[in-house]
Length: 273
Figure 1 (tube, helix red, strand yellow):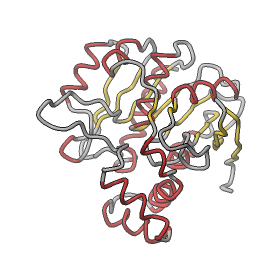
Figure 2 (tube, one colour):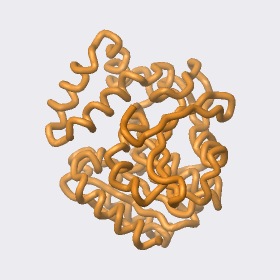
Figure 3 (cartoon, rainbow, N blue to C red):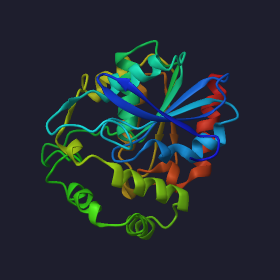
Figure 4 (cartoon, rainbow, N blue to C red):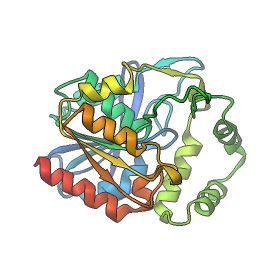
């Protein structure tokens, strides 16, 4: 195992949830929530940089990493899993940060479980305005090309998956490429047919958040999900939300400009104390 990083499994909502932990147990808790098809270790560079200041937990979501497998068509509730994990580990009012799907879970945690987290960080959550002229995009679909690629991975080596990631994302560091590729190979293919519990629209979720929240956005032309219009709407809906736009990046903001991302992350941490 990686130096100074432990791992364990805890039973949550009838399934085993695997998590990594690093940092100091006597420091404030920080929970880092990965995106769809990633795993907890995709947060490792951030965790290592903050380990001296925080008690850091990086869970693998259900159907991801080394956590419980899912049944085809299963109803899941990853936000409930997250809240239960925080409670089971005795984490008192952690800061919770999430990317993509994990940012959606993090926002839902703030809305559905008020009082659990003391602050939120949302890295390019999956919030879009409806486009009635186009079919609703969804990664979690068996007809999606991404699903077909994931289904092909058992026939590929880790090195082959890493080579594809490096070719498509030449600015990513080798450790990031490795953890990203490992996450793809660990993903339970049944996750594409599951139905995760969603409380309300994203607009209702945003309005219900009652703690300081940092919204980190990228450039839509490079693959970022949150448009300037949506970011503006979110801040108008909830004055507790402040914005950090990282120009020149796509959806994986911290993978593409880590120094700028961490500067915004640390500035927010300092602000909330």
